[in-house]
Length: 380
Image (tube, rainbow, N blue to C red; front, side, top):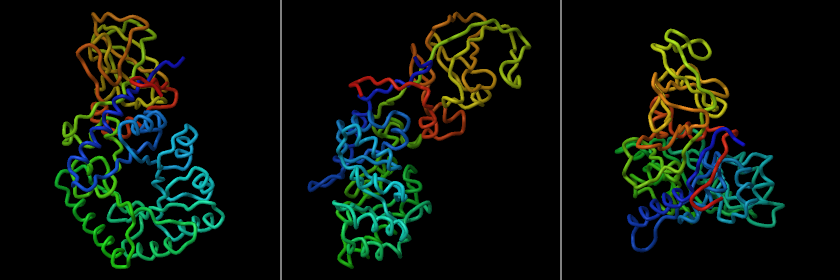
């Protein structure tokens, strides 16, 4: 029933996780290699959390990570029993879900630990804690000087178990990043301090997609790739480092065709005026579905009939208009590809991001709920 579809190739997700796992294993010593924790927050970066999680586990991931407790609950409701790490401290209203669904939890403040301590006293099972260290991201995390006290308190609190120690890189995708080097040094100092106190969390982890590719010295016991799971490199410079396959294409169809006359304006505000007589086609997808309003003002293109054609004028809430040219042959019902391939042409997520000055993360997670997710390559 949907007028636009995001086609998700779960086989590509399986492939990508397998490639990441092989990469990590190939760089590991003979004793052990880091586990892959696939990040499936934000509805699997717009691909669908449950389908993405299942494909990632099939591909070799051993852990999953989410940002909100309800995201972990969704995975459990779908029958997924792999370890799930909640990357943010649970809020008071999320604590029951943490216990019910056996979510591993990030902790980085006294207040957060107080909340967990209260619920641990009435929990039948231990709540497993991953202490997050702020080594320089300065978004969330315990200051290095406070980590030891938090770790000791976790270790001494009945019902809590210190399972992990972790941090997050600000520039993990930057080749030769001095920021990553500084963060690793700070993280090493924290680990050394805990070790001197006899505290050695079983799981140490730090690497996002970029650091998973670039920094084998930061793989530790587990890596946490997100964007790479879905076949998109975390930076242009990293494209091709691993053989990743884009997992998502975005498609719609033509719903109306009309002649446009030279000099006429198109869409709200007449931000675009036609330079010549041409053929205009309307496509039923708009900014409510994740196509930014300014797309037609920055040269964004889509594929119609195997050709790249420009979006013209302001994208509206539900529709956009493309100029297929004076001799363009197009009809109602013709396929329109916004992300993906048609004929010999391709439009990538990276193309949209570059045109719009966005991150690829924003493009993927911005695809709206009205866009139907259709799963191929193994089913949901």
